[in-house]
Length: 278
Image (cartoon, rainbow, N blue to C red; front, top):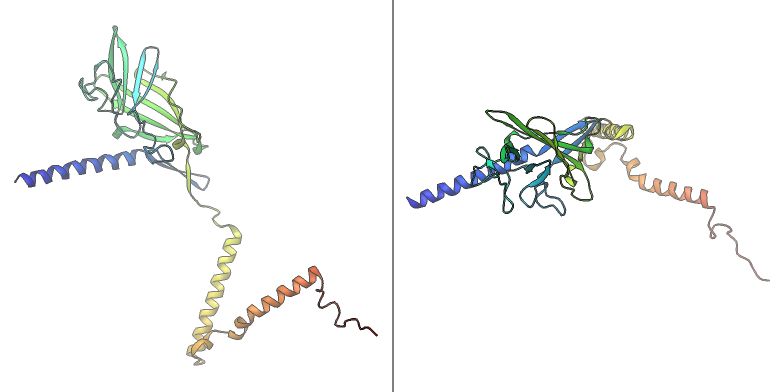
């Protein structure tokens, strides 16, 4: 009985991890089509020097301005191994004993002289869009929301393309009663083009494909005719077999002819006579 319970707990634990990973991947991916190109963003994909993707290795990002402090993590909930939020509240973000560890963004503001925490969003409420519709390769904006009983709060993080490294959030803007904007620069803010449609291979590629299709149809129709109507068997069923067999020799002769035309006759063929001493 104990073994069955242990197995059940293991299955529940594994299912919870898989659900969390799947949810994070779905939240942190974006495909945008523009000018016959598809721009792909995946914030949780590991890249060189950043095995955890855009997730902060500290467990959170932090930015402050005018006495207001914001903690946030992209694609996941926050983890505090050091410097935890020191404020009252946190009822919907981990509670007092685990303040900040139950949501993806948290803000601390002074109310009547006391720091009070308010949740700004959950991973499940995260929305992703491009910064500029006309230039989707510049970066994306990640917006987290939290709808409470008293007021609605949000945090918008602009992730701008920077292939050289990471620049953490430095500016915090208050754009509403409980709405904040910040930005960071990261290599994962650079889009990857995963497909290109529209022109495709161009007119030349299309022309080559048409020629190959016509040639294949000609060989197939000729082979069917020679097999069923002329009762030809074996390799001779291929129409104009002599012509295709002689193509390598013809191409070689054409090559030598072009070489002689552009380089002139070789020393061997300049004269068929050799000097004679008397």
